[in-house]
Amino acid sequence: MAACCVASCVAASTAPRVATSTTRRAPGSSTTAHRVPISLAAPAPARRGIGLGAVAEPSSSPAPAVTALPFRVGHGFDLHRLELLSEMPDLRLVLGGIQIDHDRGCVAHSDGDVLLHCVVDAITGALGMPDIGQLFPDNDPKWKGCTSDVFITEACRLMREAGYEIGNIDCTIIAERPKISPHKAAIKGNLAKLLGCTEDVVNVKAKTHEKVDSLGENRSIACHTVVLLMRV
Image 1 (spheres, rainbow, N blue to C red):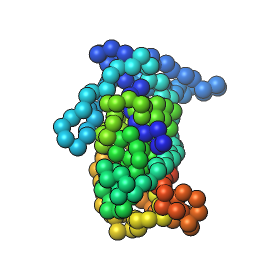
Image 2: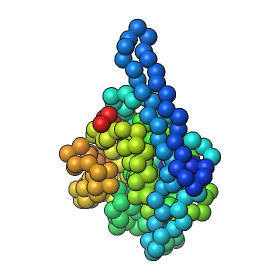
Image 3: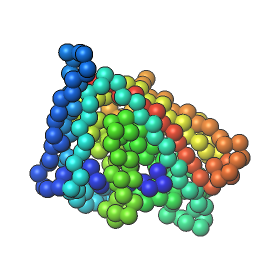
């Protein structure tokens, strides 16, 4: 995410708020499609490597009700600029919660994990909810430097509260360097753990950009994700 962070999908008061549940009947059918209410509890505290950050402040925006379809599909995309560690030594490259050795790191408000940010957008997109930049704004200091597992945890909470689980998820990382292949198994395993699913429904691929534009010149890194959510 170029705007990489989460605070807008929480309650307007200290007590969780629940979106109004409605029922919709398809024309000419006795089958009803229920809209599932989602409570707006605050996300987990932000993690900044040492200790815990502040818990997200409540928001006045209620979460939308979700029509109980048997399947939902979401797509996510994110991109971050890469800069040399020799010039910005505090940066790092993190993919799927795994730190990767490289001479460059991601410039971002949080930890810049392009894969996890992309997965968050895919999940919330499948649910018809706001993107990660709206949920965790990059102008909110509470998310500064926090680890992206915080965002995944909140996306999974919303998913399960809406009555869904991961069917399968397919991620494609785009980077000229470093080589992602040696890290795929660790990334896949950690992503499955964060999502609470088995590794056989998680796929992580990697492509170069054939030396074209900022991606091909090792000045940025990007990721696409497609997710299938299944009704529980």
